[in-house]
Image 1 (cartoon, rainbow, N blue to C red):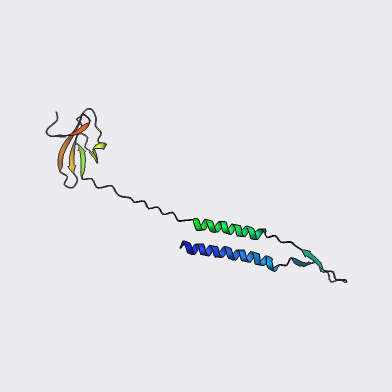
Image 2 (cartoon, helix red, strand yellow):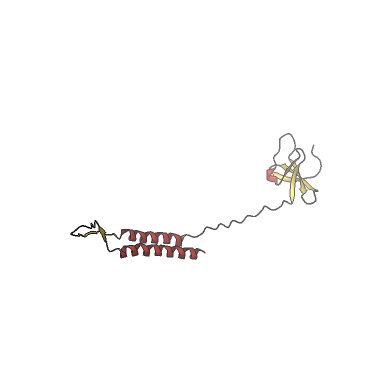
Length: 145
């Protein structure tokens, strides 16, 4: 698709360049002005000097436009998105009735023990109880006073 577009643009720029130079080539710089049907008939030649500046500007502009189009590559962003894995265990705080997805999310208050129940997501069964003590989680069996 990109090569067809660049070929079309190159062809259009080349055609415009040829048309602009052809019109200058056919004009020999003469035109008739002030022909009066009185005697003696005088013909006045007005000679206009044409400049090659428009043709050169079109040529340079075509090169610039063509190189810009030839070097333009489409930007394709391939960003893979992976959904987070479904949790196998969730953590339940029985004192507040709050569910957590990880142990890092657990926040506790000073007036009750830092304890969570580890619950299997598929079965809904409590697998074990954990208590936070001395900066780490420890398995907890029994009742806390």
